[in-house]
Amino acid sequence: MTISIKPLLVAAALLQVMAPSQTLAQGAKDTLTIGMSQYPPSLHPGIEPTVAKTYAIRFGYRPITAYNDNRKMECFLCTEVPTIANGRAKTVDLGGGKKGMTVKFTLHPKAQWGDGTPITSKDVAFSWTVGVKPESGFARPDVFQRITKVETLDAKNFVLHMNKAEYDFADLVDFALLPAHLEEPVVKGLATLADYNKNTLYNRTPTTAGLWNGPYKLAQIQSGAFLVFEPNPNWWGQKPHFKRITVKTIENTATLEANLRSGDLDYISGVLGLSMDQGLAMAKEPALQQKFDFEFPLGLVYEHIDLNRNHPGLKDKRVRQALLLGIDRETLVKQLVDGKFPVAHSWVNPLEPGYDANVTKYPFDPARAKILLDQAGFKPGADGIRVNGAGQRLSLEYMTTAGNKMRELVQQVLQNQWKQIGVEVVIKNVPARTYFGETLKKQQFTALAQLAWSSNPESPPTSTLATSGIPTAANNYAGANYPQFSHPGMDKLIDDVQRELDPAKRKPLWFEMQKIYTDELPVLPLYFRTDVYVVPKWLTGVLKPGQLPSNYFGQESWGVR
Image 1 (cartoon, rainbow, N blue to C red):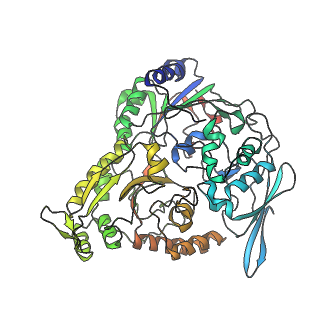
Image 2: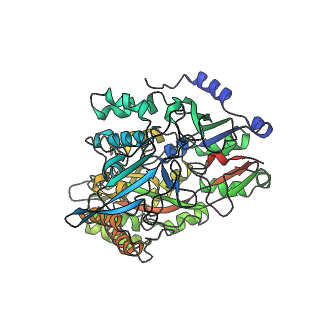
Image 3: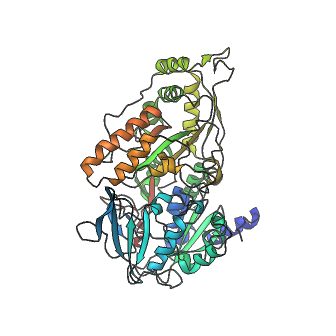
């Protein structure tokens, strides 16, 4: 069955009963209420690749391995990260000049699901059989498809046989681990795997204890409103402090701030929380300085505008280039966020080893933009808006997540700047759940769609820029290549960079990918986002001196002073 939203009065009453108050948090300090601006469209760890989902489920979910908050690979469900040096990872000859790998993992002896069922190699093998099939709708099918076999040595030891020798062989953050004892019966009962997303327990009965393997388990849910996590009694790691953590969704960021000020929220997630202008303004208030710590760390979060190149105007890359030349991004970030967002020239962050400092840049140059639009056949009409020879106005619908104050401000600025070069922009925003659940993956945006991607260190753009990442009905709309960008050269470079084990030799491949990106511009890069952390002084573990904030892992170490 699906989880329905209750009538408004009932929902409001539930929120009052279930959401921890500021008084309780500062008294007993055993509950925590977190605000976030988006609600996840799915709670399945492998489906719907949204930041909201990634953040929310990590209170109750751990991958086998992943990069930790210090950007170091770490075991979360295993005993030792496989490396070439420790002998757990080995290259093998596949014949025909091709190299593959075998990678051995040992699961933690105490690792178990929230219902007490041990996490075993069978879970790994079952998860692979589902994720490897395109119709399952997994966001990262490539992670599963590079594995040709899961060899189960025993209950806690398994070997991944890979058809490529890739440098990120130990990273399993996108290998969605599923409880076979619960999900295998679901899969066996389906007429087609394309129906899996509708029937998985993560979406039908997400409070089932055995779905979770982290320090907390999902205990209560109000679809679209909040998720309530309570300690997992079968968690084998450090005992979590809080008796209840509520992740509450308030899509309007101004209302989100108001709830923090009133005490209805204890803390707002640094991910999908307050906008930078809100955080900067709050940090200047003496009264708030006494209550909160403010941090603005730069992360691997890339704000950009995806383009639907089926639009008659956007098919021509000269129009796409003109749009970027028509944006004064330097002034934009200076005025909106005091210059704290570095302007992006591609999807590769300056913090990354593959960043090309000499990548092609598009400075604000409206005169050059007008020339390119003229060359593309779009001439100014009587009202100043450009029209081509077929009489088509250069009018673009511009979408993003409704209620996000920062994005709505950006839309207004860009709408005005693009008008100066003869491009009409019509703003149309939708709720985040609809935007990420339907609009983007089914390309229901007609021209422009603004969003952000959060990535792991040196993560190839397989799901966002490779042809294999294009969401289609055939793959159940998996992948996140929403512009439907398909370029043989980019596909080859993505494959080549993954196969190259030498970091020094990967650099020129990253440079070539950025060259194609900046020439074709399937996406308009805006800036790299600095998240806003407004953390109550009594809450520990979220801000770690000398480290990144604990975005995704380590919630069991959160506590109180």
